Length: 238
Image (cartoon, rainbow, N blue to C red; front, side):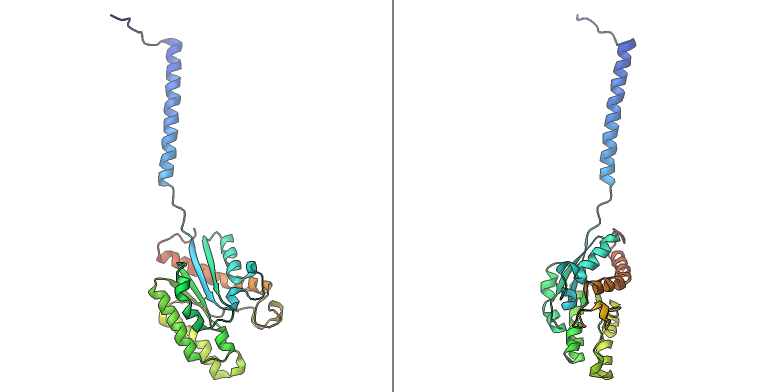
């Protein structure tokens, strides 16, 4: 028969116990790491906002980095909002032009579309009823696609008379009520007709004017981002 080994005693036993203790501690640490990883919250999905608009959205007369969608995105990200804003502005576009681009814009799969059209219709004195029908069609098409819609209003030049202004200005509130979408009453709030915030044409904002637009729009955008988050069961503040 072979030699029977004795159980370690004294110093040898202490070394064995110490080594075993370190092994158990290491295993427990690894298990804790895996458990934490398994239960860690998943990063919030980026909310994609598309701005469907004209030159005011496109950034006419300013650098690309100074366009309204870019500056609005930067302001939201400074407030820890996980958003991307897509610039779907085309200079000179009318509401009819925007309607023709809806399918192309939807290919980017936005979660929210901020419709900011109508300024060129008003400048040309176009029929407000036709502009309203086209804007109605845009909103209906977006809602049918399952997209959250925000609407930004415009105001007609007053030289076309009070009846024209009433018909044009009022279409945004009528459509917002009809489709139950959020309405930002006037896209150029705080900037319109103020020379210090406009380029020489008196229509398009300077970079400083764009920052004023962003400041004015932020409360509306933040509030409706929270409502959108609640509607899709996402964290309100990713």
